[in-house]
Image (cartoon, rainbow, N blue to C red; front, top):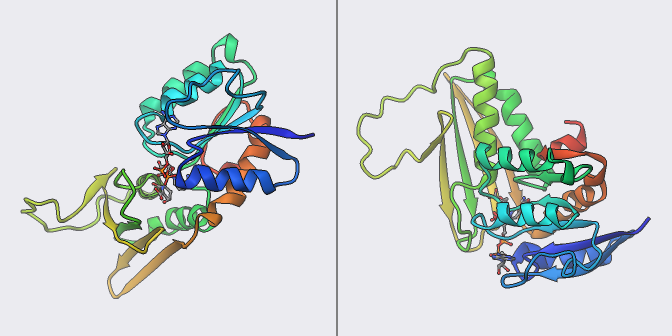
Length: 250
Ligand SMILES: NC(=O)C1=CN([C@@H]2O[C@H](COP(=O)(O)OP(=O)(O)OC[C@H]3O[C@@H](n4cnc5c(N)ncnc54)[C@H](O)[C@@H]3O)[C@@H](O)[C@H]2O)C=CC1
Ligand SMILES: O=C(O)C1=N[C@H](C(=O)O)C[C@H](O)C1
């Protein structure tokens, strides 16, 4: 059966790449390209069954609520989500008028990044120290990256499960934030550099040894298999799903 797809943020770097991938994919039909200034209604969605949102952190949550109200399933790659905004989407999906609707939100659709997050969580209980370094193109508007936040949360949860405390750190003065952002006790350092696309390194340390887990997405093509998988499968998972790993049985 053909899946009719709308893309929100269609003029952007990711949105335009998704439009091309959908147009070239078997069993999918691109029926609407929406961007800033376009209203989200069942008319503008032009019969879509699934909408894909790659916009900006400030607007993505409102888009998701409007898309659910318009009666479509939603795949979201935009960053900026918090436990509170996930909670509001869950609440919306639990209303009778949203029965049967599905939303999948993933901080990263690249297989290398999803596996890297998983490997980091697996390794986390075995190392005293861990920090995350994310590196992106300088046009990115948010820091730290959504992937780095998810990575840090996964690491923190895995450390907590085995009763590991904070990584050792004697820093007493850091007036300029040189030690980076701290998410659930894990330090994240963000690099913005011309020439980069999307990269992340997780460094884990023990006395006398270090493990480095690194993912490099050199091209936005890396995200497309994950986005297409989500478009094809989102309708099979009622309610809110967070993370592509849920479709990969990781
Ligand atoms: N989950 C994943 O695998 C990935 C996620 N991202 C995330 O996707 C988001 C978009 O990234 P890029 O495409 O690089 O950004 P971009 O800035 O190139 O594109 C954003 C697009 O959204 C549009 N937009 C802004 N407000 C809008 C609104 N109210 N309604 C409709 N469209 C609106 C803009 O006009 C622009 O065309 C970011 O949050 C980024 O972090 C990026 C790459 C991969
Ligand atoms: O803005 C980007 O480019 C990316 N954003 C996502 C993030 O913030 O994690 C995913 C990927 O890193 C590319």
